[in-house]
Image 1 (tube, rainbow, N blue to C red):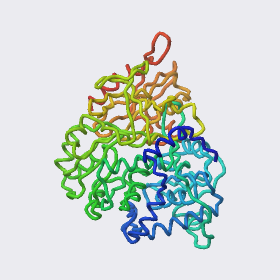
Image 2: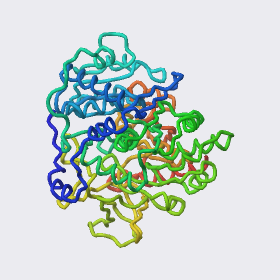
Image 3: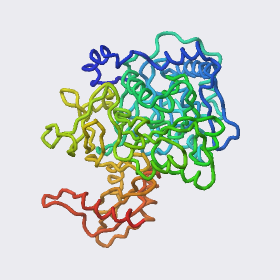
Image 4: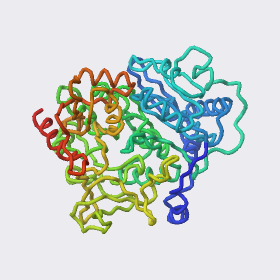
Length: 538
């Protein structure tokens, strides 16, 4: 695969000179663990359909990583080839990620919610060499779906029983030892798709240097160390899961405890049994934990730090987390393109997390500009720009979409204010994306599919407020004369289009006409005003 991370070269010399890019891959930290604490628990994986968790020490994890790496080579995977895996939170996810590093391949995690519509595009666009799926997860047959996808690539099935099973292909013990070098720090480490406004997902490229510069700064800000036990309940195929719940514990030589299906009561039992001290996820996870404790469950004093990103944290949730969980809830803002750019330090969590989205991590700069690109003073609202060490390498095959100026500023598409101490507050989004429970909803993609329905003449997707998830999705639709369209038909149609159900709108509003300017431009702000009442009424 030919990658084009054009945003790296201008930063290489200054970032390395400043010590922000350390020229290390994660394998450096895995080897340190093998030297210093080989028998320490690296991964503890809980599965809802299995009783006892699977436990792997660093020594055991390394042995499996080595086997998987040799197995991938045997399948023809070479340097900068893409290995895609659509997995829940499991030890295989982490081992595959590390195996890719060991042979110089590129990890491409894919969310379990994706179905044929999304996967056919992502696997084809990324030229995936191997695709790893579970046989079944949450009652869905991933193997059957994978066999029905277009394109040619090697399928590997976890818990499969045929010749293409994970055990048969990637855990063999008769493959030759690895030869050659692994991933270099400036090679593309990670290909992760993010929803945008173009109608198709964009492939974000990160290197070890871009991603790990962020993780080191985050570790410092959140005051994390080797004794921390990290709960990995947020999906690992998001950057939150991959970076902060899978890679970060290895950097620390600490332990990550995985939960594959979210259940707050089960999570609290895991917290008590494993001595969990820290986690990161979107706000609904914390709200569910608070509700469970309020209903009679218990937590521990050790589990006292949690970082929330994806949407502003309601102040009432910060107070509940402190009162019910004894937890400091730290706010953060970031993107797949940058990782967590701003984070509120634990010492100021109660004071600042409810009114800000944190301040920049070391190595990152922010500014707010007006429509003409002029920097605005503190407190004024404008477009948020970011530049620095953790900025991605660019969008795969789409450098024209990188949105980076000649002097390195990336247009985030968000609207924000910055105070005199550097704390930001996201006040809106210029990009057309709804964020539901920390998950970006690809608005344009849903609209494009609905536009193809024979009854629809016009459609607009907007978000409306929800107390638990932050936002839900509403479809405003104009119907052709004499045609019929209702909520049941909408969901049935999107199912026929094989779109992930998590992207389906929760509400449908049939309107005579969509509001437009005299020139015909859709006025979504008017629809958002209407939709806001739906949330206020709930």
